Each structure stands twice: as structure tokens, then as C-alpha cells.
Image (cartoon, rainbow, N blue to C red; front, side):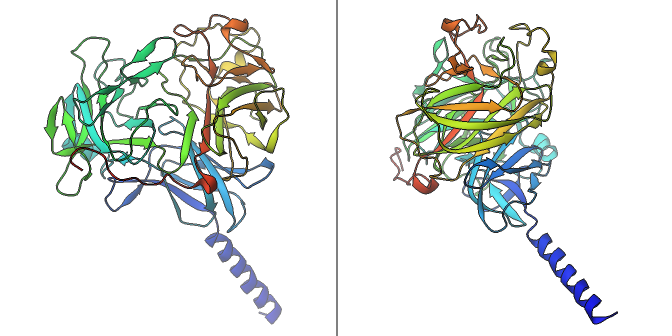
Length: 470
């Protein structure tokens, strides 16, 4: 082989091997048990991840596979980018990962306040950890000031239509003071319910301000069986025995009796420094598509508790895959000029969620049948810390400008600190939107809105324990 050809071959081999090293494959992980060594891939929960650098325009994206892995195509190598991820069944709040460096072998830890997910799911779990009860109470010591969600592993469905877990929170002990939450249109409630499930990972959520905690205090998180159909309902949950290697700051009570183990579930909060201003609290409520013509202008206002914007995601019906959405942020409302960068979200197939419980209400808009078919489309954008500064306590307006008309999903469990807009007009029942909600007087868009609590995206400061006995 001539020297010139040999040199070209060596150069090509170097380039290819260098590309493989920086291919950008990452994996989403969760702890086996909070406070104990060891992480594992968040397997069995496919979804989508999008990556954005600072500034205007589109990012890049990848499918999250069943092994929790993803491979971003051609993002900036060795330059920080911001990830936003959502799983097909919405098993977690929206995940924002600022400062991600696109290198092969990256492990992205899903932030949790509490996690118990031992090896061997589902076979070992079904044989060794499954317990049947009406209520499971897991005590935790809070490191956060807000809770945003609980995802609990359930066993096979108890009745033909499935399980239907519900979650509440008590102060200090399993029999301590119950923290009430407000359901849209129905006032104070003891719990939030998940949608029907069967050997899955159903999730419930709280918005910022719904479930405030005192860092260092002990709380009991109750995961229970369906409550409205009578006391005979039960739930098959999973309790991992604690042999000195369990969660050190709490324990589980099963129907009020102490059990030397930990409940298999995930608990999400804000200790990592991100605030979930709005997201779906319960698919059991009433998600729907408003009876409006497809449009190229939708909007949602929100009250910021953070200092900069972290990420936005939402779902919409479309009649084509070839649609993108420009996201503009305005102070106050659509009447003020937009601020900050304009990100562009691309459409991802969302075959399983959000789940519409009452698909016949409201009736479909004539001639728009294609917009109601699954899969619907997921759109998401992310911002680096401090890229789009916000003022805590101030209202902002998110405007969605798609390249082609879309029909956005709405939530009857409305977000009380904001309003939905259709073609820059406030879209609630009082303004002629129609009686689409069974339980509440208005609705807002199904939209995840996340902000950074601190400059630079810094986590919350850890505070000393205040719990009795600690």
C-alpha cells in the first residue's frame, strides 16, 4: 500500500474512532434506594429527549429506548447543552438537565426525593416483595420545600377495570395531620388520584404551591387503593425488606402497622433547584381537546416562582408529522412584546398519553377527525439557566406558533395561576368557550412549565433537620 493511502486509512480510522467516542449515547438512571450506593437504567419507560443550546432555533432530539438509552445526533460536542425529556406514559415530572455535555456513556440521574426500586422487576418483585393492602405509608425526611409527584409501582389489577391509586401526605407520621390539596372546582381534597393501571408505574402530581414541605421534617406519603367504590378495594404494592441496606430516614407502614422495609416508589420534589409551575396533576380528572378549530396561535399564562425559565412541553393533535412550533415568551400577556430567545419545538409521536377519560366530551369538530387520532404529538423546548430571566411573582405568557394548525390538549383540573388563550383571546368558559368541563368552571392548557429556583440553576440549600427525634 502506498504511503499516501496508508496515511488516509490511518486518518479515516482516527476520525471514525473519535466520532464513536463522542457519539453522544446517554442513559437515564434512578437509584436502587435513596442514600445507598448504586444506580440503574430507568428501563421499560421509552420516551423522547430534546437538546438545546443557548439562543434561538431548533435543537436536536432522540428516542429514549426501553433500556433508557438515547443517542443525540450531532449536537455540539463537548459544549454544554440543555436536555428536556418526557416519557410516553408520563411516569415522572418533566426532566430538565442543564449543562449536559454530549459524550458517550453519560449517565443522567433522574432527580428524586425518595426512590426504592431494587433489582429484579418484575419477576423477583412479584415473588418476594408484593403485599396486598388498602394503604401503604412511606415516611421520608424532606430535603425539599415542595413535592411535585409520586410514581408508585402497582401489582396486577385488583378489579377488571384496573387499579386506581391515590396519594396523600401526612405530617410527621402515618397517622399525623393530613395536608389537604385543592381540586379545581371541588375545593379541598384529601388526595390526588391516578388513572387506571395494571402492573405499571402510575403517577400523580402536584403543582408548585400545592404540597409545601419543611426541609428536615418527616412526612408520610400514603399510596392507597381506590377509595370511592367501598372499603373492599385493595392494592398490590411492593415492599423491599430492609436488611440494614434500606432507606435510612424512614420506613413503611402497611395498613397502619409498621413494616421493616421500604415502599417501591419514586417521589419528586424541588431539592435539585427546579420548580414545576404547571403540569398534569391527574389523568383521572378530565383532559380533553377543546371544541375549537385547529389554530396557528395558542397560549398559556403562568405565575413564575423562579428566576429563569427551564423548560416547556405540551401535547397537541395534528393532521401531519411535518409541524414545528415556535415558542415565544411575553411579559404579562400577548399584548406585550416577547422577550428572550425563540425556541422551535418539533413534533414527536406520543402514542399512549395524555389519556382522555371522556373522549366524547366535547364532541369532535366536524371535518377535523384526523386531529383526534392517536398518536398525538409531544412538543418540548429547554433553556439554559439564566438564558431567559424571569421575575418571581410576575406573570408571563407562553405563545405557541405552529407552522401548521394544531389542536392543543386542555385540562379541566385547571392551573389556578394562569389562563389558556386561543388566538390571543382568553379561552375560558366565561368568554364563550363552552361547557366542556364536568367539575370546574374553566380550563387551562395541558402544558408543563418548569423554572429554575436559583441563578445558574443551582439546587436548593440544604437545611438542618427539624423533625421530632432528629
